[in-house]
Image 1 (cartoon, rainbow, N blue to C red):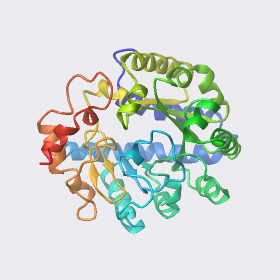
Image 2: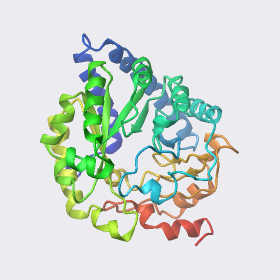
Image 3: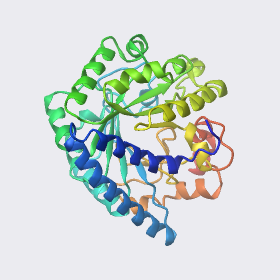
Length: 364
């Protein structure tokens, strides 16, 4: 990857590239074109709002990650959320109500937040929250789903509300995907992709990158399958080990360099597709983007956390506004100590510095 790559600039131009790609096919896809053109204007308005807050000394991130449920219908091998007890059966955390999520989305729109990523668990298990998100058309909601719950009701919902963007989780080709997510998952995903393409619904895919699948998932051969099925975004997420016996799956510098180089090649080959990697791309943004620098994470119970891989909090959105949450004492300490800045060679900084984060909370 070229070392002058700038993540924030790429995000802006990436949206423009997708817009151009959709307009080229507008005679086939009028619904998507109409939404994208309206969203382009909303995105500019949102950016102006964030810039105004910034001039007044308040940093508003461009996007949020929101885990809207701790329930999931799959049992993927090495799942970080289950191991971290933020996802699974029998958890005692009280999940936020639909009404509170609606208030959060409204406040996000007022602050100029343009993207709210909906995750879980399996977010399609909270249809009420997804329907609420659909009401806020100035925000784009990428919905990170395993893709196994796309029935007719959901297809109608995504077809009608183009600000909901399905992001389908896949691990590579059939053997790799079924090995981690369960037999039949790959074929189910292929069927969903065909249906989304047939209905003209733009979607993306997310891949958990490990030492075992990095060669496959960064190849043109692999992405070509997705591209021909209508995929217009690919997000690479570096695997975070959940136990010592899964450490060998975490990408090393060798795999990260391969990911960077091949991702740049893919960007040049597919100009109407957005390619991102986390946390790898963050090193081109002067450090980790968590804790409100570029985004933060809202857990299922309303806890405001630096990121999904650093599940520590001293603030809850049941008790304060989104704007107030950005002034979280923990976020402020992470900023003041410089823990998020400096050289970033890949991997998750806050996950690696778990004890230091705990000490800031007085839990060390």
